[in-house]
Length: 117
Length: 115
Image (cartoon, rainbow over all chains, first blue to last red; front, side):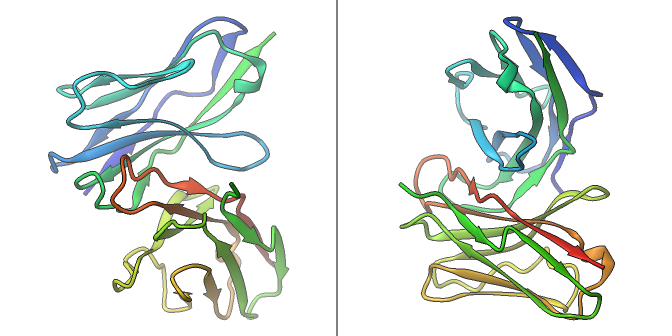
């Protein structure tokens, strides 16, 4: 069975600082994908970044980067230059199986990030 | 282009009534997913449709839950004889099969309250 663990309590960061949100995962399948989603108070789930298990380099998307450590089974999200609009709940999720096969996502419980002005 | 849309955005019903929740995926997306988000259980997978294949119903919590997808596009999630524990936000997502990262794009959700 697949599992995503997000154990950090609510996180606080000063505006313009960088912050790391932790995610560890567990699966026995060698093929998987890791996703981060942002859920602001309005409720919509916004896709941020993706990392495939066979990707050689860490994924980056603008201010978001994923610190992928395969041996440690961790996929931490790094947000650089935090903005007030980054305040939200952040979910780490995993899809098991080959890219293109499509399958359900298993989510962690989420981390609340608050950005202070 | 338009994203995933869901209706209604809010639904309040009485215990024992049936409800239907609708999802309109992104045009051209062949995969459609339903998830449920509640305070106690977090985000849970319910059901997944892919093209004309048999749906993956492994996440449906009971036989009171069913879903269909007509014409490979719009999907309806039906909950019969609603219970208070069905109160949650029901999220729909769609993705483009066989392309890139299989990223699932979510709709705004339907908040269901069972009184």
